Image (cartoon, rainbow, N blue to C red; front, top):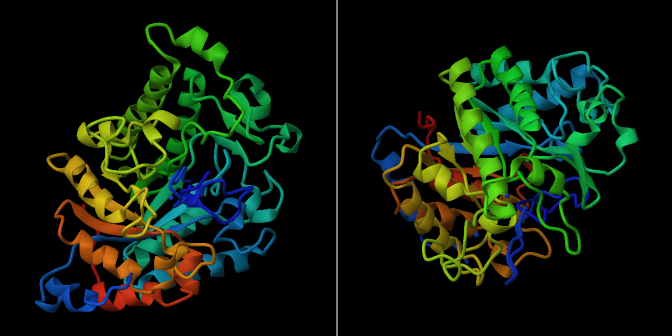
Amino acid sequence: MGRLTRRAFALAALSAFTATDAAAAPAPPRTGAGAGAGATAGGGEAEGRATTEMRGMWLATVANRDWPSRAGLTAAQQRKELIDWLDMAVRARLNTVVFQVRPTADALWPSSYEPWSQVLTGTQGRSPGWDPLGTAVAEAHARGLQLHAWFNPYRVATHADRSRLIASHPARRHPDWVVEYGGKLYYNPGLPKVRAFVQDAILDAVKKYPVDAVHFDDYFYPYPVAGQSFDDAAAYDAHGGGFATRAAWRRDNVDKLVLETAARIKAVRPTTQFGISPFGVWRNASTDSRGSDTRAFQSYDEIYADSRKWVRQGWIDYVVPQLYWEIGNSAADYAKLVPWWAEVAKGSRTRLYLGEGLYKAGASGQPAAWANKGELTRHLTLAKKYPQARGHVFFAAKDLRTDRIGAMARVVADHYGQPAKPPR
């Protein structure tokens, strides 16, 4: 999900998923050993009570991160790989797959608005000969899984060469919609026409398929790039009157996208949920007394995402903050962020799930805590203290399969002793 949240893996294309742990903490982009975790985790299961909690995984497609394994596979090969991921989720006793179906202003279904994604065939706009989203929904439901369709609202391309976009691409037909920033292309969130188009593209999938949820990650305005500015001056001049600052206007643009998308989803398919996975830090308490006890990148100020408001006002059905840090992290401590988010969700209609950085477990270059396979199970044990925390989503599928040091196997053994239904 740039600097990092869910982005540590492919700098170029995934400028999106990795949280940095340093003191300057995570500007993203989606936290020692759990000695006693097994003894306390899953106690309700041991007592035979019915289990209802979110157990999800992100299945990323941008830059072929998780699926398909490479562009250009046959339809049969792509389908088999996709089914294998769903079967893996079932074996891990998960109940939800968050499937990235619009990675870069393109589509993994026959869209009426945007071209087929190049992650399928290697060529943008070329049909793969089958319907990945339609198949994913049907096959997930056949296995008792929920399928949450994950859309990136404003990212157009992970490069800055417009000529590489198919000629019919909306970004080429409407060049004034696009801003080049940090070596990538983005739709301008400050243009009402863009906001409406993005919603139309998303609703196309909601109309066609009984997806269980529409899911956004943390990419609204792009993560800051040193020495560069996001050029939306003309849009601000045209549409920013009445706002004291450009930052306030930008936050309002994101708020409008969230509110309008929520309303349109319910109008089209009332049973479909709307969830967002924001960067894990809203604001630091040193900046705002309502903020968390952290010293990290502030998504409210830097990417104009007022995630606290969306939860407190109940604009979204669920929130999955990307808490990709270890317990005890000096800048963003998992053990401090969980209670902060629980308090934010308390009394709201918005359900709280916790985003877990499985990709860090056993990976080189991570803090020492991530070399311990008990780190993640400690997270789930800690979260059980807070009734607002109603489950976890793991980033991401490939790391679930690899499970370098057995961290996910430990989670399953300690906490997922029996299947669970996702909250509704």
